[in-house]
Image 1 (cartoon, rainbow, N blue to C red):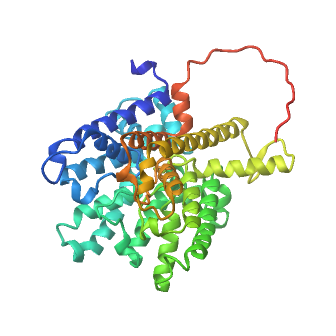
Image 2: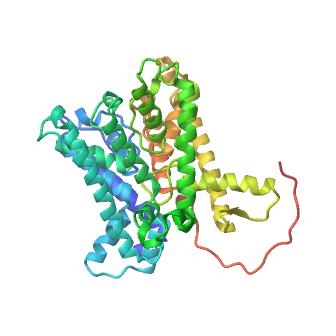
Image 3: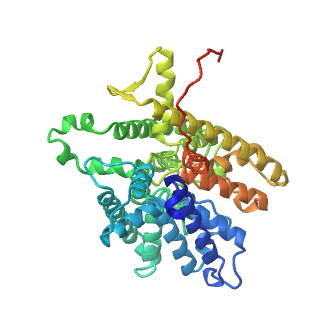
Length: 454
């Protein structure tokens, strides 16, 4: 049966399978800290949020779930962040089983391909790389949190937050996320680095970690990087720096007003890094003004980079869209950057991804405005529409930031957000390819005719 499925269909099915298993486990009485159990819809919502590394929650993770429930969430975050097929490939390699052509295509779609590296070796590198970053992050957080939790109790929170940060999940065992640590340089820096590295993509991180193998002259290192790495690093830097400046100017007389200089800097940079699909926050999101919320929505929609633990349309997609506009403005036939030409089929994919993403967010927001009309009676500082749109973009970007309306969603609203988280994690194009019919060869083409556009 599975041999007849295409790689995109296998991706979709693998994620659905893990989500359903996670939902069943979270709905068990043993997963709840007290008596009773979580209803299946909320369990499905939480499982989807974990596997799709989003972080939106309908119940508080730290107080509602038992250690068993929290462990289930953590495992789903790890599986969803790295991709189920990555683990499968790694264990197949350990068992000596060869990777099929279909599995190679699947991994290529999910992770990309490193230079001169087999897919089995790629899976091994990804897992080793991931566990090293998560281990280092856990150790640093553990040493920092010993005074707060105690030597024994600090172990699990350290591991949980490190994995959640690297996988860009945004799940926290604290009811207020990381707000109490907004002035702690070490914690904010460690979490930020884990988020950024996890959102780079494994191909990019691998190139950065093997600089000496690629070229001895460090001055020419950037020149020798792959085009994907150049696009990812450039756009990530541009987004973080420009957004930090804008955020600071927008919030200097609002949430940043009563903070000291150190806290202003830490909060500013963290709050423009976390919308890159991480979901942690060091200040209450509902306290941001509308202009800052709009900036955050844009960052959430763009998301992280391909082949990473992040969601959104991806940095490379956004970059190529900009390049496409400039190439048309300059009347150039091709999309070019860094003395390279982007293949036309990649440009077409970019346009399709952006189009599907915009249509989905618009449609889902429209449905939410209808199904969640009862929220007009709630105290919503930024307004009904602004907060519903924020929730939807956060779900699609697999971010997890919320203005506080998640737990108030209706049955239909939760279903819409579940679908948005799922679509945002597997990618609009992957879902579209999974749903399409088998290709039928066409050996003809119709004559061209111009139409007016714009």
